[in-house]
Image (cartoon, rainbow, N blue to C red; front, side, top):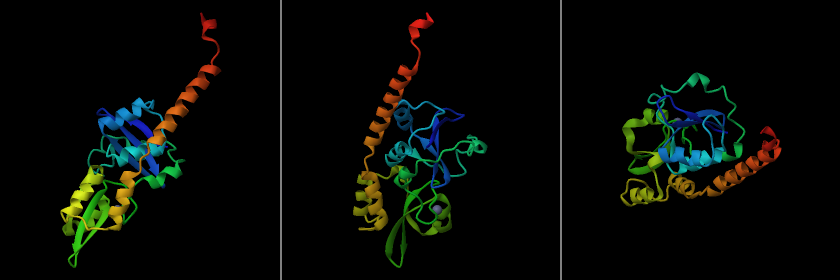
Length: 202
Ligand SMILES: [Zn+2]
């Protein structure tokens, strides 16, 4: 389960383990607000599916490995047990080459006049930089943007990677938020029952 953690310079990030890989997601102000509004306190863990939903909507993203991470305490990265949410792990898009999560982009490249599209991480893009005709951060990819890029010939039509991205973007996870809200309400109700009568403290 990911951990909502305050950043040294303000705001929050979410630290997660996905398929054994430690990943830190940055959050837009709206992404942070949705987590806080759902009752998730800074320094506590929350369901991975909620982070997957924020990533799908572009409100959680993985920064480049060199930039912005310096302010975070990476030594503490493995101090927390963040696994145990395996069922939500396939809800995240990963690099087509190395299965990594760092700074993912939707890319297009041309070889022998045919256009190919793939989602690639920062490291794998670095190996192929000169061949790209398109490289868009995954957090900026939306359903209308995919259709526009296809219509403009910037993405190949009927491409398997684009088809998968379309499915991913359509995968509404609002039921997961609802489930979490109900669980939190139940837990709070349970806690109230467990507490000794507050009147006796007077
Ligand atoms: Zn990669």
